[in-house]
Amino acid sequence: MNLDDFQKTCHQLKRPLLVISGSKGCLTCGYLSMDSFERNGDAGAIVRGVDTYQDMLEAEVQAVSSLAEKLGVRVGMTGAQALELFR
Image 1 (cartoon, rainbow, N blue to C red):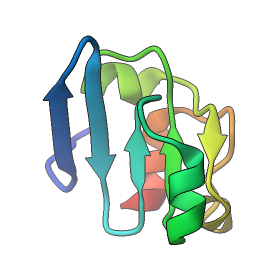
Image 2: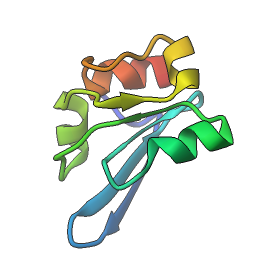
Image 3: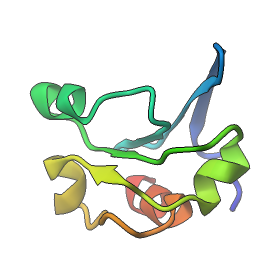
Image 4: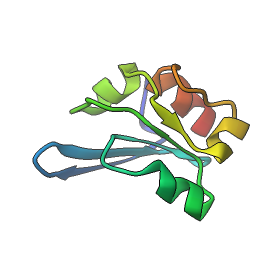
């Protein structure tokens, strides 16, 4: 998947804090909380156990905000599938 249309953010901590953002929502690693997405009314999906953007694309979505669900994002789909809906 080409990520040129997405904003990518990486903060190097003990493990990288990774975010890939599209115009409708974002895919994040497990550092971020689904409670924050819900509280702020944002579309988000979380994948866990990832260290690179490629890992995020291949990983299974573990948590989805209610707004992301309205866009069609579901637990169990790949990060790449979620990003297509956040594009």
